[in-house]
Length: 305
Image (cartoon, rainbow, N blue to C red; front, side):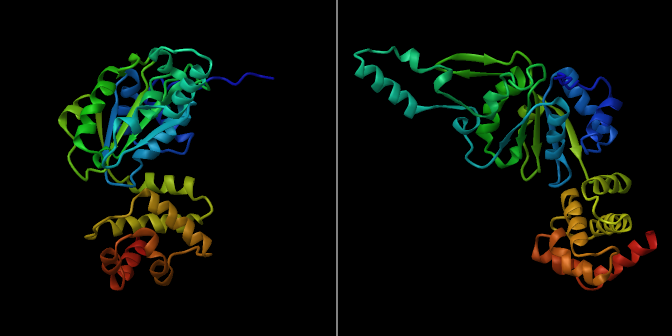
């Protein structure tokens, strides 16, 4: 049986663009450049932007490019080291103690603090080789850091700058091969400068029309080509009105899939009104976009097509 060729890291910006595209992620040159530099310089990458512009998807695509499993740490208020880094498997430790006592043995405390009893969480796992892809760096996504508390940001500084963590019972664990760490933020609050300074930075906005159409065509191929183009044009016009939360790329893909599932091959006022809830997730936005606005946006879309 032929051995599979190990995935190769991109060796240029153009190759970064091409490898991401082969996994259906169509990056602009700016994003591909900063990602390539993060790999070459072994620096974390901080991606900031509106929800739904492809920050998380970039980490997923990069893990596929590297041939490794994506390690994802979803941030939330109250996230602590036990959930993010490691925990000790206390039930197994107690069981080991009882077994030793039944044998008349007195195990040293140190024997209870080793890998067999260590529950690895994403931050720690990212510092250790991937058994399935030992020659590739791990890819760690620290998603929506702006949802976590400021003390957790401070906790991350060691791993972001030194690619190491300190575990009191074991000591310092340092990555032999630094992982690619991608930190994302939806900017619901400002992230501390100390964290940003340790990373390369990229602001991710909504894509240009042609690139978004390329993404939609790849992710929703079941939709008619004319519908894909009309949907992208409509969404670009929709983003121009005063909305609390404009639709992102994810909503554009979902909308094309929904319209296609309903048998729609060309946009019309009724199909748009029936499916606005796929694009907009707030009642005020729905009210603002419904009615005459739909007709106006569609008129502009028809003129553009």
